[in-house]
Image 1 (cartoon, rainbow, N blue to C red):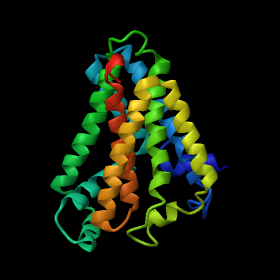
Image 2 (cartoon, helix red, strand yellow):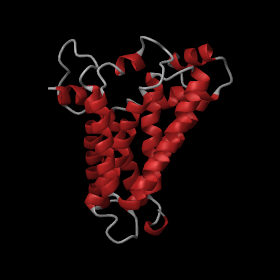
Image 3 (cartoon, rainbow, N blue to C red):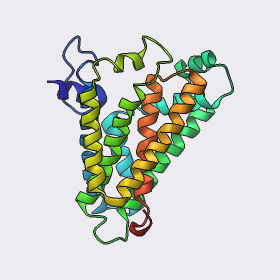
Image 4 (cartoon, helix red, strand yellow):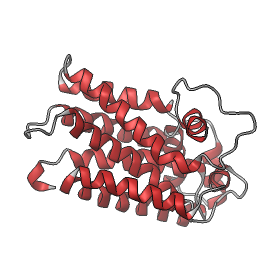
Length: 251
């Protein structure tokens, strides 16, 4: 079952190991669906924490669960992109830096702001004064939209040239079709409709953040990599959650 294989690849949920020899062909189409499940589980954890803890701790719990579900899979991309994209060096040297397992100053700062932004946003959402905004389904809609949209944007990034032919970025493009991109778009638009005007504002913010990151990757790396995809997911998730913190009348 491709959904189970996708969950095994992209999460740490106890679904068992993917079948032997399973590659990215066939499972990438399920990436937005995986995001929906991640957002729903994170919303459940945040809602449960809201019944017991102050908002700031709720945000930390929600962020911790979010990271735990994915196993921090995409955070490595945040750190590597922070080290590689922000340093002054030729493209080949940037790619070498991004392959280095050591964490640099720029990478640490990128992790701090991405995770700090997500935890802060979830804490605000747990303590929002707007009527009905803190209901479970409202939280679930916002968390799901952030996770789904972030992963749908990977399908857009896959249209760009790969900085490392034959690397993870190239492998992830295997089997992605126009129909899977269309399904990702429709799922994103569904959650955008469910979250109202703030959903539209969050979507536009995610598109702007994605455009900035991908244009930087094209200029400084010559293309995209698996690290860029991971960074894209984490950055757009955090940006969208922060936009959801805006008061209802300002979104």
